[in-house]
Length: 381
Ligand code: ATP
Ligand code: MG
Image 1 (cartoon, rainbow, N blue to C red):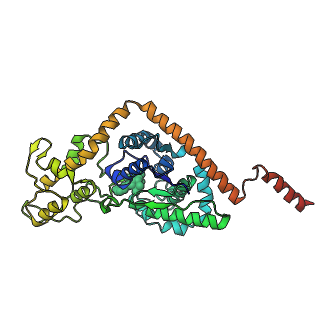
Image 2: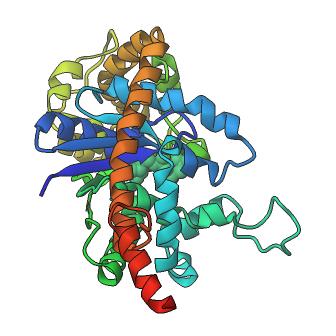
């Protein structure tokens, strides 16, 4: 069986370092591994509209931002198919058929949707007359549309962050139900989570559980060096670590979580003596040593933050530089998306045809109509 990847992001903002460690970095590695027959990377504009219906311009503007982020991180249009969800209308048709295989009660149990409804203030009750309050049906059903996205490309592997686990489980249930009801047609996908625990759900700079575009606690891949420096400086650490000499907590300390996600062994040799041109003594050889010293006391937050800035910037500087180049060639980037959407559409159309065949709603396919007429004629004889 071929090995196929489908994953993507909502164009609700520029991508941040949570996306990078949660999924983007892995995608590029998988792309370069040569182990996959096809890689589909989707900009989920239709899904973004489910909670931004009143602001389609926001979604429209962010499509190019996400595409630029993708390509500057190393997603290569010669190796991966980058496309825009709304341009593949077959996906909405699949969603419509899958909706019949899922109950409202099952959707209500989805923990990610539950949390998101709460953040967005959708879960507050409404009398149904106020357009603003209450949950848009499209938003509530987005796990089903995600099942359509994944199955349309017969994806075997979905590299995503931890918050997507319930979505992949939902997809697997739909696949099993579909295949049991209509015959084997769809492929059951596997989730691929980051192998580094710190990357499963990177917290925000404010220490909140998840860095998220919608929560405004992000370090963006496209932030300037100065912006990153300022954000790192203002980051949440250990509120009990007031004096440098105080013992500090590493667990729940966002600075250490980011170091866990980004720090490489080589960074100690490279940044050990000098942070951005300023001579300092940061005499450690591993993150474990740094943590031990912080726990014991005697290591200040500013020192750790300076190190973190260097570590982050080491990853971000080349991404930033590549982005600057791509920003000068937008017709090329849009052409990549146009071509990718065309390829994706052809692929999804094939699966949709198979789905309709399995459901026997392919009335006008060659051979089917003749058989149907013959069958009905018998009834009316
Ligand atoms: P929104 O708030 O609009 O939902 P988001 O920041 O949650 O935006 P998505 O586009 O929903 O981003 O998520 C895209 C991908 O990035 C998913 O695979 C998701 O698991 C992953 N991801 C998002 N935020 C994080 C994070 N903080 N840590 C790890 N992975 C993340
Ligand atoms: Mg999200």
